[in-house]
Image (cartoon, rainbow, N blue to C red; front, side, top):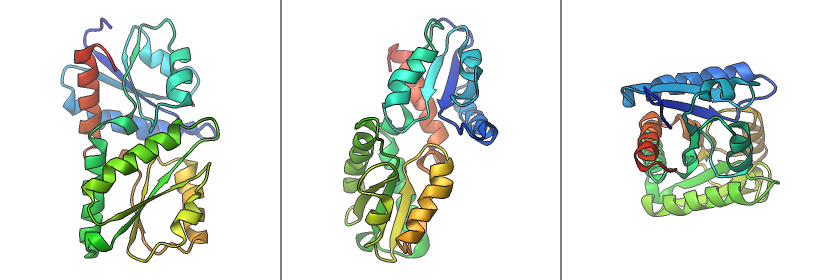
Amino acid sequence: MNTNPPIAVITAHGQPSAPAPAEADLAQLASAVAPHLLGWEVRSATLSSPGRLEEAAAGGALIYPFFMSQGFFTAKVLPDRLKGLGCRITLPFGLHPELPQIAAQTVMDAAKTQDWELNTLHLLLAAHGSARGPKAAEAAEAFAAQLRPLLPGCTVSLGYVEQAPSIQSAAAPMPARSVCLPFFAQSGDHVKQDLPAALEAACFGGIVLPVAGAMPGVPELIAKGLLKAASNRGP
């Protein structure tokens, strides 16, 4: 990658049925990342806007997948669409090693606001899952495993949109002192529609946090991932 200034492109799936809102949200994230990457040009593009990714990445760029796992879109779709453009792809957002610490702090802050003791708390990680393969669930399970020692005494459970256990079945037995953290990068239809419907059907009485991609500290974390990839000449 020989660009001057260095170019980073943050890319996400977006919303095919209505690309504009997700595109605007991603552009806002890129603007928040830029102050942490002085001397860089930080761009954004969702996969749902035809040609936008290729235009943003033209000339060679470091591509940051704002995805939660190394699944179909990051392993297959992105490389195919970027073929011949001289780009490199970093580790996806959901696999960043510091993300569990940020999530743990977010959960602890939420519990403190409610005056709930951590050892009485139940945490539901609401994730996408996938019918295409195991990568999405593996990433969510690894994330949960890293969270548990950071939240001593807190019970951490998983529920999925596209596979078992479902969000509804995971949420149904949870007590009132529960927190749901959507393990998603952006607030698309799954977060705005499927998640609330599942929680309502489960009579979930806890609180629902913003998606993982909107947690405090995320822009700096993305910048760290880009700087590490740039210095290592690898993901």
